[in-house]
Length: 293
Image (cartoon, rainbow, N blue to C red):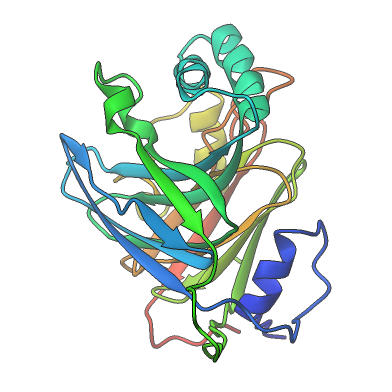
């Protein structure tokens, strides 16, 4: 049976750890931020209104972009978080795990969009406060700190007496990250919104990567065990790391074909990549006019 979740249900997930089905509560009026990433960085507005916020990410950088939205926890300075983030993305598992654990204590991660040559949009919900937009691909750049963009979220517009109509977005598909792996449909429709939920015990992501035609689960197993060749034909598109019990809505018009749903995040207990531990699934992207069964 087709499941259709409204944006109001998606918003409720951000403050609850379970999905109780489509909710009827009104959603906050949606806003959007257009972000174009170049090899020298990106620009973003200094402030946005609280509510449903969509990050429309387009990359002019051949390496792509991983734009994430984070909120520092009280008392954590930005430079400390950035230092821990660099450690979390180190190739040495010991350094990476220590950094990842520190990052989880430093910030709340609200997700964001990974985009290559195909733009991607991710919708999350923000409450008033101070946030930062970070391109995780820039972490090794010498001017990384200068590339981070502060974002102030303010309350509803003053003087507005008539509330805007609620934003309604249908999500025919749901991808859930759990400690046992991904729970996801085997087929998604290009351009259709997908609700991504993190029900695992640590921060996690959901990346769609195109693979060579005919790639099997055994091929993915072989690659991640170090006994097989590289099956991917392009970089990732998807939702960058979110803290546990967070959710985001992904919309991207990926070309139809065969993909793998993966996470490149390390298990903060074992030090191994979660994809190596089985967090990977084959997914087919169907044309936009193809109904989901």
